[in-house]
Length: 251
Length: 161
Ligand SMILES: [Zn+2]
Image (cartoon, rainbow over all chains, first blue to last red; front, side, top):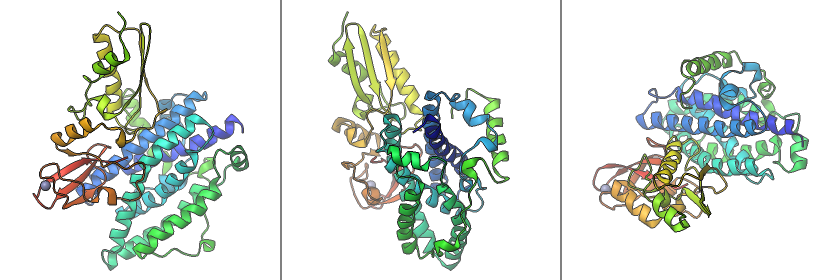
């Protein structure tokens, strides 16, 4: 496997986390409950810290330093899936996005924890313990809200229906799928997707939420290759503005 | 003069977690290795949570305490070679957490399947387990929020990871 392939993998993981971390931080002071406010801030801090760990690995591979990479690239240079860049919207959507994304992320880190590249395996092993709490948090709230009352249930169902095609975009195949599988880096996006469908199905069933027939959904692809919605660039501009005001500020 | 590994360990016991100033870094389990070669001392550390803002402070506090004891020929490394787990917190450390008002993490042996493990954390005020988990996320990455149904107090727990 080439170094280019590895960088491609690390960039998409780091960019997903950085962008979703910033989206989640928008709930600081805005959550429907104080506990949820704290939870989203805390998960945002986790995610941004996790992205830094991957930007550091990229830096070791010769990429620019984490600050430059995180705060000076344009939208078309980002490899995150479109799911994470969508505006935070209503709480239902943010919760469903967090649920769909973190389930995938957890499986990804479980796989990468066994990766033969030691530095990558160490980070993945560390992060799967942290992401586990994000998954458990999402499961609890998805079940709780969906079973709360009819209105809450139908809002959760619409949020799910809206988010699913974007969530499938998490698993957009890279140019290097076969290289990863052959080198034993991880089992590839298709394998994560299959496991993910099983895992979310179990929770959604308990929540009484319906999954559509997967074949009827058209995955929203493009993010992994730099194609983004209109929502990413304004977010990046805002992030770099904050960074430029105080380049020494902590992440 | 040359110090032994045990000397270094006792110096590091002076360094406390900046967020929970009652527990030393040694008892917290973040010191993963000490090597002494002649006058050169290497200290390896591992982060509790990767996004924990206190880690940088811990690292510079370790450097400072080494300097204080005249050890200037040193390297302090923060890396992930050893993955931190709350099971690494010493029993002395757990006592200190409880005294501080934080419920210590239960031993989990790397099996954390769902939130059941922290659903009924033991209240540090009254020792009751008739408690309710309010949120797995507290004011810092390592804490969860709870309510005690027995004494009526809200409390935080250091979560198992
Ligand atoms: Zn109590």
